[in-house]
Structures are given as structure tokens and as C-alpha cells.
Length: 305
Image (cartoon, rainbow, N blue to C red; front, side):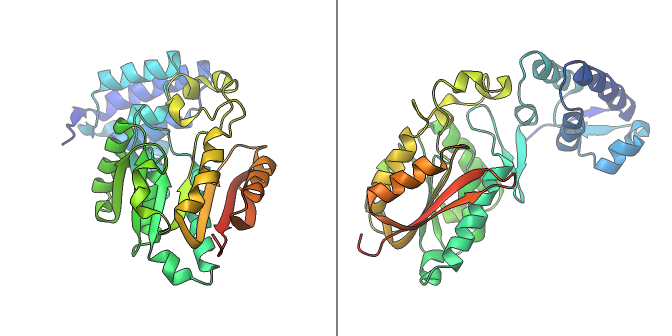
């Protein structure tokens, strides 16, 4: 179980004020500090806004003040992501454990679950799809698998990752959220551990690596210096893994099955063309994220496959 350290409200107030000054000086969003204190000290927004916690004699913290300060210094000096400092991040209605073994789940990826739900609802075999096998390839923290398990409570979710460290975190998140009974975890590369499911999968959902190799070093230091490159680097044009998912998936998806991925801005036309050329897909769709970027590709496996 997680240990807790006790600090006074005054100590935490003084730390917060000091951290705000350093954040401003280092061009880091000040909001990150209050987010951290919500996560680690259980404070709510009102208490932080009114600074009412200042008068508390004792407060429980998930870290000691010294540990928090050391991690905050790493935020400033090494650009360590604030989610890794907290060890968790909100995603949909969940709070997920994260570490530098997994990509930090982004808000835009939440749309994959909504698109999967809509894709099944719009299918002539909706009930069959909703109760079948769903696959999250490259599960990382388990975010997509957990979202699918919540959205399709009668389905069986199969989550695959090449990183054993990531799988351990995904399994812990499933256990913590009470969804482990609906999810099976596999170590391996893409479809490789799932040969027994050929032709039996209702839907595949994935957020694969899609950043071109020469772009990865130019990303924000929070990303390039701390998040796993295995989850970022998609090869020369960023499409290496997406090509494989397009080519192999029809062997596993059942007739009318759903194929759904996240991709990088600017890749939509190339992905759509690859899907068309493969010949196994129909009703190919490109969907935008909340910022209007063409971010998701959706297709159904043709009946004749």
C-alpha cells in the first residue's frame, strides 16, 4: 500500500508559493502545481483558490515535502512530465497509474472509445460486435483497454504490448479499477500473441507509434527525454506500424469488424490510401479530434474477407 507523509498546511502553502515563482521563471504552466497538489495532497480547487488549507495543522501527502521538492526540481531542470511526478493521470473517468515505462495517455485518445462505441452502434451487427472480442494493440498504461471494457461490459478485451514493464502497469490499473476480469493481457508484438483469435475479433483499437524517426528528437523535452521511444517512433515516415496493422488485421477481424487507430496530423490521406489499396476494408472514414485535426482512421472489414 502507498505510504503517506504528514505536513502542515503552512509548510505546503510555503512550498506552493515557491513553486509558483519557479514555474513562472521557467515558463512552466502554473496550473501544474495545483494539479499536483490535488493528486498528491487530496486538495480540491476551491481550497487551493482560497488557500484555506494553510491553516490545517496536519495534512497527508503521498510524498514527503522533500521528495516532492526534488521531483519538482526535476520538472524544472529535466522537464520531467508532471504526470510522472504524480505517478498518475486522469483519463476519461479513470485515474491511471503511469511511469516512464508508458506513454502518458492524451485527452484526444479518449475519442477512440467514443468512435468505437459509435462504430458498433451504426453497424447492422451491433449486438454481435458489442459482445465479442476487442483488441487493444500497444496497450501501454492500459487506457484504451480499460475504456473498451467500460464501454462494452459484455465483451472480452485483449490487450497486447511489447513492453513487460508497460503490461505490469496496465494490469495494475485494471486491478485497481475493478476491470481485470474483462481484460486479458499478452506480451508480444501487435497481433503475434493472438493467433488463436484469427477471424474472431469484433474490433481492433490502437494508438500505435506514428511519429517519423527524424521528428522524434525535435519533440518537446518532456516527451523526447522521458516518454518511451518505443511508443513514439513510427519509422521513416511514421507509418511502419500502421502499415502492418492495415495488412495483418483482416486475418483477425470478423466480417464487419471494426479497425480503428489514432494517427499524426497530416497522415490521414496516406492512411486512407493504404486502407483502400489493401482491399479488405470498406466504409473508410477519417475523423477529427476536438481541435479539428484529422486524427483517427476507422474502417470495417469487408464481408468477403
